[in-house]
Length: 103
Image 1: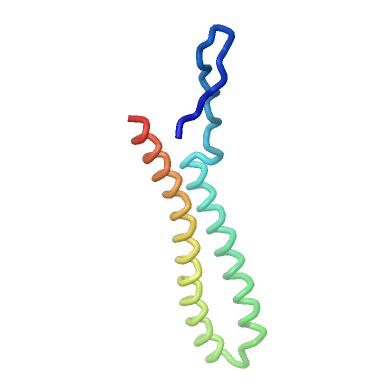
Image 2: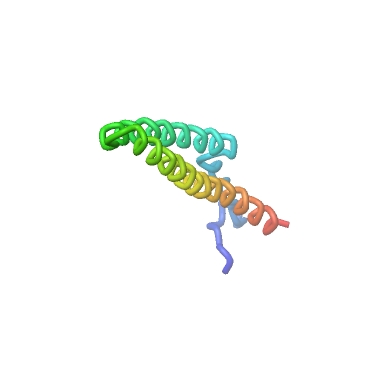
């Protein structure tokens, strides 16, 4: 499908204006990923420790639950990092595909 742009006063097809730059550069995305990870990780550690201290009846239970909490932390942050990196690399892949289409 081709796009027919309106003719100018001389009967020539006009060139469309350039598309605005992507909203997020790759470096901005890296900073965003790091910031989101830092916020989520800090919130997870603080809130889960508070809950664990309130719920654990003794230090042995607290220690065991703390290990499970650590495993949960690794799982949750791994999933979060996967999603954020997937999003960032998707933009890079799209840019590469668009560039190949121009050649």
